[in-house]
Length: 424
Image 1 (cartoon, rainbow, N blue to C red):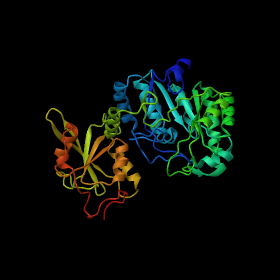
Image 2 (image 1 turned 120 degrees about the horizontal axis):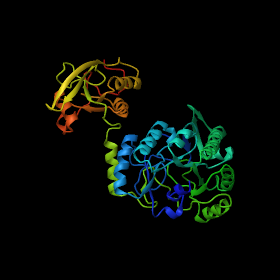
Image 3 (image 1 turned 30 degrees about the vertical axis):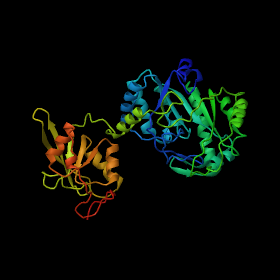
Image 4 (image 1 turned 90 degrees about the vertical axis):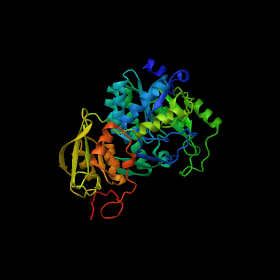
């Protein structure tokens, strides 16, 4: 792991001026609520965990990484650090890591987590050669932990008070043990919160050192508005320095932390450039999954000529391919739509019926079904016109703004809530 540490700017102070990192923001959900955390705000001048301008799917993140490598070729580490917790979003996190490892076999991989749900994934993390993991451990005493965490969601149950802190701590310490068994380099972050855990940080250092942690990052908490701790001042630099001196008896210190955003890129301490933020924005506009192996486009139509049915009204979908030689749509078949009702499950069933389609053309659709379908790789276009023109537009990439629907009204003359209940 020595070579890896030398190339990781967060784990090695001497490398931070030579090597950059990129955080891929693919993990929006979190499974704990810290009393100092509010992810609602996004200011580009603000460096703190939990903040990102865009959330990407794994495939969007890979595209973004490819663009970022061109703009910032000194990137040596790809990390996932939120904006929630990577393992509250395990499918997205693990798929992203697999894609990066496949396309960049020599890249260092890194994740930063609260440690609650990392245990089930450690074996695969090791297989993917994820060489660095950061766990934020703010207390090893559940009484103190209960002051820091409002709740913990574990195995579909919500816990509060010392029960929550106990569950979190048990998982954190067991994760640390297992990661070290797999020879993963582990950094522990401990956030210094005046009056809460500032006299307890050395005990955290002692405990994690005994379990094999490699480095400790004692970082001052960031005062954030609209949180339980919004009236607690940030710790004085002299307090931080004193705590670092004490905890250095137990572990090497990281003292150059910039409290990075979940979409940070480049050299630590440098702000994201306008150019890279433009690439992040463009990546978020791409289909959430690639269109390969999706050779068809579907449409909702009453008579088979016009795009004139709302998604909730459709009892069938007309499926088209595209003849590249003739540059014309070709009708393939009609497929029955799932029955009305069932909410999100109905839209998931639609995605299954149209699993080989890259797009669905409808006359209207609610936000909920559009989001569900997009997450499966099926783009929903709200259009008003001839089916063949819409299908040709999807395959050719031509501008279809003249077909875009201004109104979202449908047959019952109301706007759709996307509940899956159908019309009428």
